[in-house]
Figure (cartoon, rainbow, N blue to C red):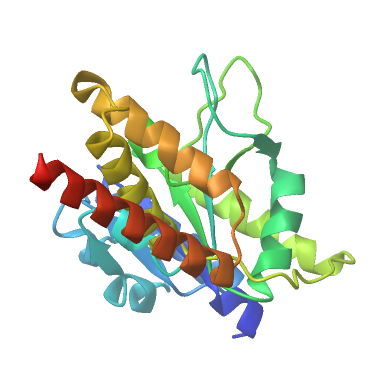
Length: 244
């Protein structure tokens, strides 16, 4: 398998139907992708899905996670998929053709995760807060929602098709999602200790902070420096709080 394809992680979040999971695995096998990650799948027997024709190895090697944060921790770019509908999104939304080119550039230098939500509700706002930006398939307005397996197939086809275009590799390294999540957690600690965060609105604030940190597009060295700064700030706030 070409190295560039080996860097992609397809992440299925709270998938309800094992047949859809199997169809997604089959699409991955069709286009040369091997790394499937599942977050809290609804059915425990998904590895036996009959729809995964020719893709038994993809299902057998699928990694299971209990949170999106853990599933994308080692990825430098996290892209969510959405049908948009009437949701008020807080991320840039790119058309599939544009998104595929950007993903292809990043795959040349690091891991990328593409998130697909459950068949019923898609990705939650909490799930989306882990994404750098979103991507949508240009479906007809009368019926914008696609079957999960079909959506995975269309996205991966476009990604493979992008290889035929002149795509310049991304040369600037990005901090991994796990580092960004540590920055998010420390920043939230500082905000809570300083009294900035209203305890009643903790969840929305967490999502806002997480999105803001990802918009910074930090390089690994900058992320390390920022982590050190925040650790010192949190430590000082705790010391002052204990001394009162």
